[in-house]
Image (cartoon, rainbow, N blue to C red; front, side):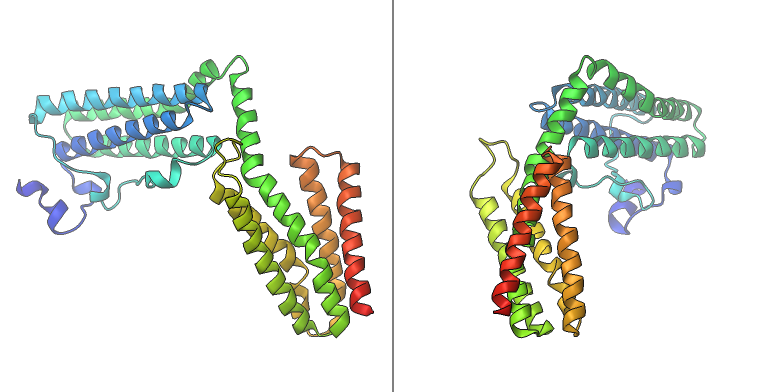
Length: 329
């Protein structure tokens, strides 16, 4: 019992101080945790990406098999009591992100996290095998290191088998559509609102007062106020369950942030104290903002470039002209 007290009494241990028994206990816990993470990914993806879910289910089964081999060797060598050692007890052991930070990631980010998990496990088994003098333990750890090294190829082959026949393309199309509905569409609406609707009050104030600081304050208040309004409106009007547009907070965040940025883009130049210099820069920023909206519409919403240019540049130009005319009256 004294051998495990340092884990709970004096903080964490160094990896190179672990005995073969402690290394096996640590490996058992790590494989158990990884299998649970893969199973959670499979459960999370099953409805929208069934083929990818099958990949993660197979990986979870393989991790459980590794865990079984480790437990069999542990029971043979050290008995039935497995030491309660976890990765957080080891100062220099690789860590896993909290599951609530990764369980709602998109498909591509989940795949990246899985690759990072496999690389961490490979490094652990290689280091553990290199430092233990127990022949049987070293052999098993070396075999598991080899298995983890094959995981990239195995996962690629498994993905090709399970995601073949057009399933992979369907899942990629679904993931792209979800990204557009959850982030691009609300963000684009916010950017259009912030960039276009704030043109009139900002430039009306600029030409009416010719005071850069006053113009900046009006632009700041209009941008932030519009961002808050658009964010709450987007989040409140649709919970995403029937429309499939994703979590309200994500859409509200995208819409609110982009609305604010769209307005601030041509308000920030008025921090420059010289009126005509600030105005010239603000007009250049407006031009860039409108072209950015055109590009996003064409790239993600598949709007023909001519129609996007006509809608955005004409509409933005009219609002800008209204602001300048009213401010100069």
